[in-house]
Image (cartoon, rainbow, N blue to C red; front, side, top):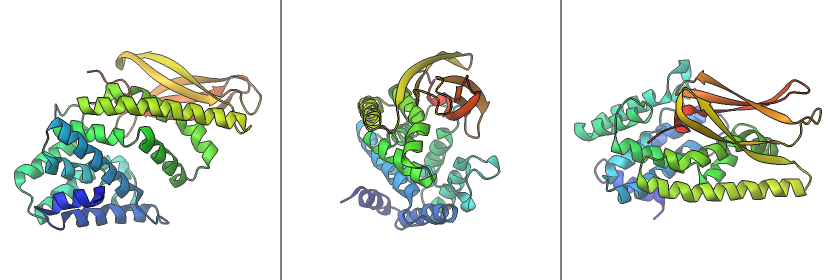
Length: 297
């Protein structure tokens, strides 16, 4: 039995048809946004998160049905009405609305429904207090984007955004490696921390091998560096893993990095800008959700 059938069986046991209904909502909303989408990447991601969350739930002794329901709704509002972050409204507000509506239609007990919607709200509200269900979904969501599975997602997202392979590697490796570097300390469960440390080792090795291959074949000469940043917004130093070309493609100068902070839709952002001082050219920028790389435990 594949992971989709396991999750479906778990939910359909008490609420038959709910799994099918939320799947249709997620797939239709993504197709309305990505007009040429053949298969739903968002639904696949949802199932991946649910599968990891159920493994964590077993280790953390949490109720599997509550975990499964929270997981399948956690991204359901991402493409509401065929848009992405319409009117600067966080997608999670729509996820909660969809969950509450379907729980009513499928007679989900009020206590269970309130537990799930509270966990969804806490996923994106750092002031919401400690929530065990939220912690498991949070860890599962990040773990789905790390290690071998995360690297697969890494390349899929590049295709969805219309980037070719080399540009995708250059533009996003800094982000992927920085989150991987900080993944274990960002985990909220002990079981998630164990998985994150394994994924970090794999990711660093993968990108080093990839960059070596690109250099040997004369395609690109990329270097990996480390940068520690001190800021009043975080009590500890922020560790960034930087990736850049060894030389500026326009003048041969050495690229440099600048950092800045800004308020994003879902969180405060740290933006890392790569530029060439010699030709005064901005090469690219990468942004991070600040709470996820400076979280303290």
